[in-house]
Length: 231
Image (tube, rainbow, N blue to C red; front, side, top):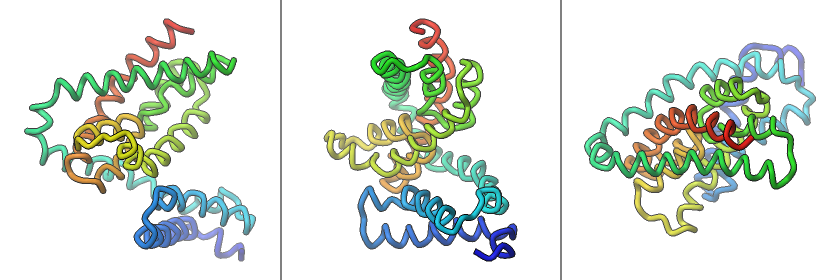
């Protein structure tokens, strides 16, 4: 690639938007979990950088500004929650119980697999908050003494896979209740998965948004507690 093009502040920003738009169009024509725009776009951008030998620093010069949209985008999750506030209030008890169980199972699964494969304890400390949003996960990992880089990588992969397969897994397991679908996706794959839940419907999106909030708060307590008890 021409250096004057790749080193401009607009390159990474424009490349990301263009690739995502193309992947979205592909998904509209061939609807499948493997054509999920977030999944395909991620690997497509990586491939472009590798093939054309573009340094990540050059790409991130402009792409980093997309991160500024994360906060307002996350705040927008409150809109479907507000619209479904009465439904959420009526079902708050099962919501809290299901999210609590989901958070506990997530951390226990990480610890169990660490023991099963004979991995270093630092792996468990890094992956314990894998199902919560990045900002909270980083804070938990620092408190547990894990590797932040591994946590971020795992959280991103979890979100992408949740967005790609969340709806499909719900169908495979016969989960037809809309609230259950939203809670499962939001609790396991945080904000990225919630974008898929919003596509499925407003009730799914509202419960997934609520699950992000509650699971983050619960994991802050359950993660260190389970790690302290078992490791």
